[in-house]
Length: 640
Image: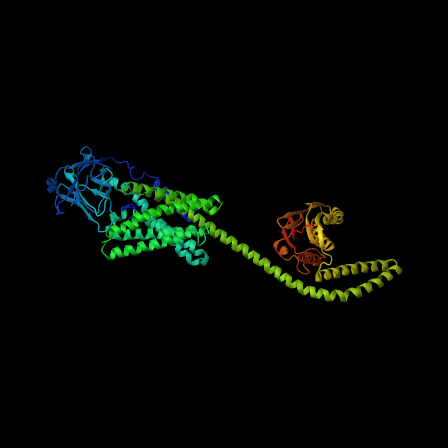
């Protein structure tokens, strides 16, 4: 087991609120080294290797080891002699400020070792021995005022290549300095715990999701969960205060790292809709295999009492670190390519993930350049933007899925309405064909006799007979509509030029519109051709435009526009009449439905049927009190 940078080595609105709360709470006070109390630095000390086999020797016996080497913070250690395991660090407390502190304390910000002993003269003040690979100590040790004039000794040893002090030590008032000394580590714990808690909520909520939504949701939840564990288990604080559970923290770090990488690839792959043969898919498959290998090696190493620790470090630190750098570079490149193509989710991911990947890759490169003597810390804050961007992307996906479901539901409802209308029309067609023929002949005979009586009659009788003729003509018109609806076949099909057809229609209907106080504007592009029957086409549009004229209720205007759209000819008839609500709009074309007092609904039924036979489509858009728009689409026909 190891910690990567230590041994050669990451609903949307609640998360935003959580992040802002932590930033406001933790970044408000001074961080870590911004305490107001006085302190003194110990920036230099003396160092000596211990080659004796007796590792329990007290500090007094170190004089026989030879000369001490004076070092300052950041200086490399002297070459390690053969057989040397332990090392000694000797220093003295600054006497100038000791009288100012009631209870002085020694603060060691970064010490690399597995076993640490601190002596004040010959008295041992502190001892810690770790049987796991985590080798970073961050110590805060209270001192006795009576012993501040003594020489202090640190005895350290390590199972790895890292050993020694890499920052200056401090002496300060223990109680005042303690809280600020561990503040950054506390931030890491709170941040990591918050991420893990948020991820746990996401995993619980996953039971309410559809199967198609689970891969993205669960992969993001696991990315957030493992990120939280990585952040919390990377800081020295839990290893300092919960030393018996150090191995558990370290195993959690390793497992989280092994799981984080394939889950990150899976989420980006699903978000960008990459195929199974894409670069992301192949990279994810490789990472799954390598992570499984690392987990198996970790178990094998533990079962063999860590006898293969050097090989474990090689595969899970050196090799995995290189894999991570390559992987992050590939992910940045892939998301950038999709972003340049206009993929909105990729743009959002590039903003957050690009910052995280660049920070993580940069720190890993610097970590290896410094020969493993560098603690990664910038990635912890870059991960906030990374996680937030991923949550925004996931929220957009769910919103798009919801919108797609609504759109599909509306299309399904429209399809069902059309199917029901078609079935009703089929029934009425059969009735119309039989009834119209049987009724038309008696009506014509009756009309003839009434016409004769009308010629001989006078006064009131003639007026009544005239009314009867008008009603018979109206009945004949209804029968004609029935026959047209029942047999809408186009007997004479030719290529029609729409501008010519609408010129005739305009001549018929403009006077009618003027009588109603309305105005008709026609804008039909030249060279628009459709296949159909001229009289049937005119009948259909006369019905549509007449309905618009009757809906004006006085002054108003009707716009007729025709143009080509890809392989369709589109005709729009727009009026600013009283309009219709959704219920009326959904019933247009139904038998016997009409918003007019004496309407039968047959005219619009015939219009739908004619346009359908001409392989066209008719739809209406309307809003109560605003107006109605009829949109007709025909296949474009060549004039040749």
